[in-house]
Length: 342
Image 1 (cartoon, rainbow, N blue to C red):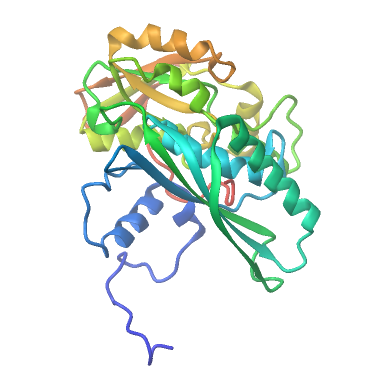
Image 2 (cartoon, one colour; image 1 turned 90 degrees about the vertical axis):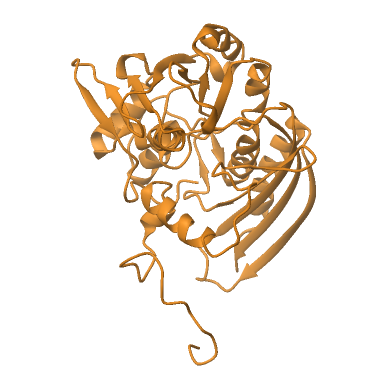
């Protein structure tokens, strides 16, 4: 093969093979993304957010889904694939409209099970008015893919004229969390390790119906769904891109006790655990309480609360004030806590 193709020698320093951590959404993922995008001519449309804003007021995002198990408490791969895509648009202030769906299935995969996941995906689309406009399907020999992988590309139209993004952050801005962090990751972990956590369920949900209500807030800076890498990764990315510090308070975070118990038993950092219906929202301090009130009007935001502030101190770093009164650094995960969660 190397006699036919030419491979560039440069790459990630010391990296010869991908590790599972390169798909975890943390620092290794960012290094890999930087290496890949560095091969392409730069575009002002590629601003480092999960969704790109296109000329003409459109927005687009793309993602792949390999969750294991395929069905879990609170959802399945079909529901997850649509929620994940529409949420990437929603947090930029774009209404999801059109969907492309790709299916890669293993030979022998049960057709009835596949169609069940497709119905879950279709149900979310119907609830949002999103239309499936194109797609693709592949069946690969047994053993070459683990059951079922889905990929989605979602197109929407911007509702806000001023784009939301981390570059909008200013010192003094309030940081709001819409629900307990890490519910999806904890649910998948409990299933994998055979743990019984009463009441624990993935927060997998489409965020547009809730987030649409806060888009008219004039002081809205940015929003992000807390998926791979969890709340910690979102805040670290915001801090680095804005060149500002962020400080949060452990006592203000709306924790879920069942999720905390799973993390405690397995030794996981709760701030690194993924959510699939959880958003971080940054807003001008004077608009914080209004924004929380708007979020609480929707069932997905009943536990929304201000958890911290943006500061000009310690630029590029995130700190958390602990229950004991001390402060510790919050960082992105380096490796993979739990593979194949989304």
